[in-house]
Length: 155
Image (cartoon, rainbow, N blue to C red):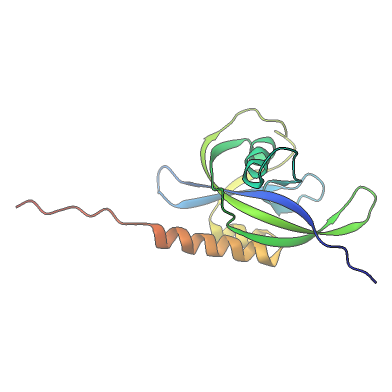
């Protein structure tokens, strides 16, 4: 049987640093159809670059705005069940987005459950093995880039 090439989607891995603890948190949401934990993602849009699509989906699906990275963080694959019942392979290109604003109103408000969790917790919740790995690698990357503030001694 012939295997079709995977369809392409673009996603945002939305993150912030908690105000009180300064711990890295990522945003996960339930899908509207099955209720499984996912990150905001969508199909390509005419006249929009990949990172712009990911940014738009983050706004529409989970109500966040922020600074999105143009370069992809990575990729994961899953099988999407279409309205017709057909299952198609999908390759998702993921872009990291530092959340600067959480909106009270957005297009899909009320149709998903949203939670800010650690990367480890997010990895435990999602089904896709490659997405689990992306969360864990993202945590490592952010840890490696964290530079402690050095205070010079007076004198």
